[in-house]
Length: 201
Image 1 (cartoon, rainbow, N blue to C red):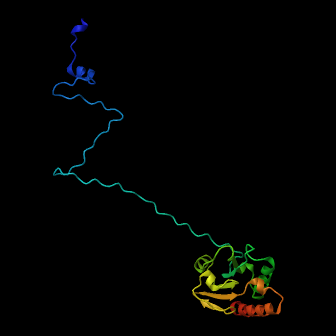
Image 2 (image 1 turned 90 degrees about the vertical axis):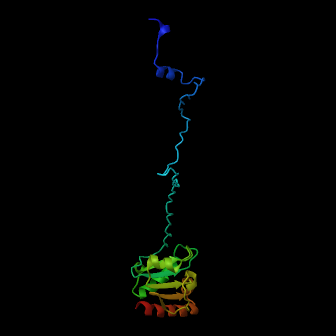
Image 3 (image 1 turned 60 degrees about the vertical axis):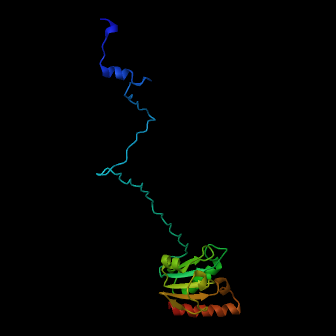
């Protein structure tokens, strides 16, 4: 069998010479697809042959989770829902001597530290809305902290119980001023005691 007289089918010859630079007359060479070849997809057509609108890509955004405000640090168990707000810049809660004085006053009202929650305004500015949400006070003593300091919408004088929106408020001078042995401090302590008796006895 002579190698010069081999007859190959046309599709074999076309495949052997598919990358030839010579283009046959009236025809086109099949294009070899490579990794870089981009396939063109014609836009979709409707029944009448018109182009259908292409849907825009939808961007899904996750809702931003709002962080809960940090809870106020408190001293006491708040069993009787009595909140005591003090302003002691140099202490976490209350200086030891002032705490003993406060404990003695509470004891005279048949209360103890388990019944109250002490919050130091100096550690974190307090707003009445957040305070009521966290502690739900029935009674709130402001010792050296004015009503406007915690954004109370009402004002009232010292040593005068003030009911408002389900809570009874009492505003007095700071514990450090009450806890003295001067004649002026004794007068203030008497006023405080009279108020506490009306509120808790």
